[in-house]
Image (tube, rainbow, N blue to C red; front, side, top):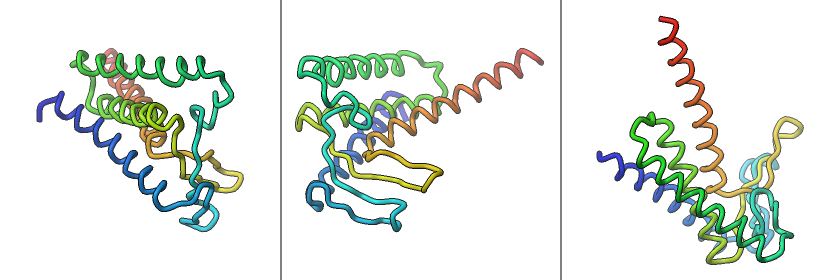
Length: 166
């Protein structure tokens, strides 16, 4: 498959899964309604986030929100798209990671443009071990992409080190 088609399809897939999940939640939940998926460990609660990650920036004035929650993210996402299309040397894991980050980022920016806020609905609480804020599929895509980039960087640095030592 052509590399640019692969990149486009992966970004569109991430956006679509996120947007479909948000439409479903808005249609099937009352605002702030909680539904248990796995006891009290994994729940769904429909909320609208007027800020960024975990509500950060929700109390900013409208001009700062426009700059930091719409314009700046759109410019960064545009640059990352340009970067992955132009940088043919990127390994497959890095390309997939960047596509997840871009897709999730575009999906949340889309929500901010269309709705003025972002629909969130997943919450994980594993007791003292691990606890999240309320998040969505786009957030999961971005986080997964970042973790994949870290692994890609570790593997690539290990390969470079092995080549240098050989």
